[in-house]
Image (tube, rainbow, N blue to C red):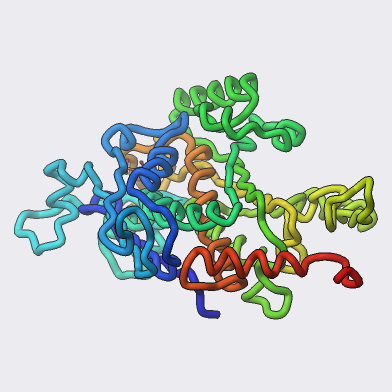
Length: 395
Ligand code: EPS
């Protein structure tokens, strides 16, 4: 299936920088470097981040595709600098040109990271080239691409938000999650509405840090204002839930994805697992209203007019400060895993990355359904279709 909104990233964690190219951005969408940088800084935040974030201040530099503050339909290229690269050691370690001095190879393997599989697959005697690209630093470039997708979606009334559901053993209740206050969440260092839960989460992170350990957790991303009919039931690779699942599982350390009440529905009887379709009447004038949203806005791979609700489950960061028993890449002998520095927990940052990934998938699906070369063409295609979404006997 040919994507309508395509993007790629390039860049290693301590190389010169990161680059993304977004192809398929329609003309007429307001975009500035400031708009992109706002999301980049949101991703850098969050309680539990490590020392690297004190070095970096991500700033988007737009190289192409935008003129006088608006997209012009041509590919948009965005560059981000890695400030850490300017430190002398990295300039040598990550030089793109041949070097003459001996290099300090990384030969102790971290379980859970790309170290072992990557060195074996690519034939390296050094973990460095593998860990540099597998580092979650790459997600900054995704967030830059995602900012373009969000701007396109926002222009047609679709908005994407995120919140933290759990960090370690501390969990936000379903009731609190369903009453998210997005403004308060932006002010929270762990991205939750509830201050008591926030404090518990901070304590949990402090404890893990003192134990020289790391934590995982769960983040939730919601899209509001999503129209009917994105994605399709007719072919496996057009199903939007599958495409969202792939996008979320591609985020570093995400090992499970849930859409709507996916987990809880597995143990409910069928009679209690559906979102009942409400009749249309004077008392209930909302068209095709539902009694609940257990499907998370997706039925048979299509959007059904409800909010999209997706959760990503992240394992604890595999660079564990206390180090783990492991093996040496050269000899196979016992050796504790490699530790340079790391974050303790990245669940709040992962929420921002999840927003970007959902926005990127939705932008692609939006262009498939309502495609056009400029924003006003897309908006009028969308309005024309939405006019047809009603009981069939009504003309
Ligand atoms: C990461 C290790 C850390 C994180 C990094 C992801 O970097 P460093 O090796 O420089 O200490 O800070 O994340 C980022 C740089 C970022 O911008 O999110 C890893 O191994 O995945």
